Structure formats: C-alpha cells, structure tokens
Image (cartoon, rainbow, N blue to C red; front, side, top):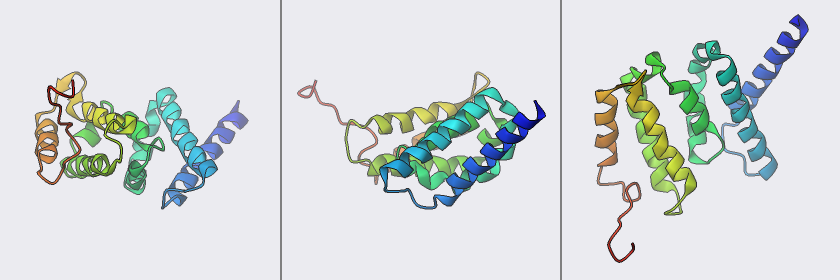
Length: 162
C-alpha cells in the first residue's frame, strides 16, 4: 500500500512539472493532448482528494496563460474555486481572473464556440460559496463584462436571427 502512495505522489509531481514547463501552449497535437490529460488528472485528483487543493493554489498564477486554449485549465480552476473560501474571497486574484477569462472570450474566433460557453460557465463558481451568493464577485463580473472594449462576450440576438 505504501509503495502505491509513493508512486501516486511521483506521478502528481511529474504531471505538475509538465504543466509548469508548458510556459507556452504547445502547437503539436500530441503535446496538447498530453497537457489536457494532465489537467484531467488533477481534476480527478481533486475529486478524490480534496485536501490537495491548498497545496495546488500556489501554482495557479503559472497556469493562467493556458486559459487561451481549451486544454483543461478551466476545468481545473472550476475544481479549485468550488466552495474554496480562501480563493473566492481573494478579491485581487478574482478580479484578475475575471479579466483574463473575458479577454480569452473576446479572442475566441467562433461566435458559437463551446469553449466560450465553458469560460462563461466558470463565473458560476465565482459567485457562490456553500450555497450563498458572493455579491462582490457578482459585481466585479458584471463590471468587467460591461466594459465597452469587449464586443464578443454577449451575443447580439435580433428577432431576424431567431
């Protein structure tokens, strides 16, 4: 049993090291898939071992650039922020993350992008903590989204398009 725990820890560190070494999003398909699998691994790890969240918080600033592409980082962030008071009440980091997500949405090419909807869905995890709404985070999301420089966040739907 003890040997399997050590083996799991080694995988955890090697996987984290790969993510941190990807300072740029890889262009090769195989490397992109590996990066995505690494994030899936961490999502599964958090599901099964909630106590790991505090040890992973320090690495979040090093992965935010992965939001630019759908490589699983948004799923990892959902698990990290889900009912995590320490992260949800860190106003400076929340505002920075909201802006990064809005910038990523703005830079998405397709108007009906699935990834765009995943990014918008992440805001749900920022506005609730243990079933209670977080007014500050709600206000910040609305403030950033209403910035006139963003043209692609909210879709313009007219009666002719419906």
